[in-house]
Length: 115
Image (cartoon, rainbow, N blue to C red; front, side, top):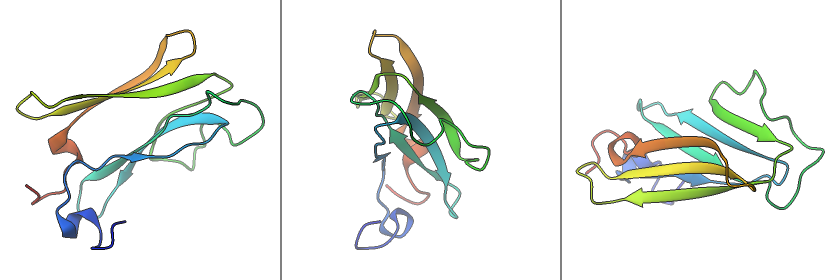
């Protein structure tokens, strides 16, 4: 949360959240009261695997993807040349295989009423 308040009130467009957990990798869509959602990317596990939280849990209803026990890293690619700029997130196994991919447009990660 920024000092000026939530993105909806501050009209901050294009917010992406990143975090990490050395035990696994996860992606969450976090619904907001305004009707739009934060997307949190937890691209981790390149440096360690083993005991830790599960890849998924039924209580995590906002989770889109989860994996543990894999060496992987995250990659963000941005294309600002499109009318509605796009970001593509990929979770990539250490062998180069894409485990998960999510494409988001700027309008999808922008609170209502933001410019």
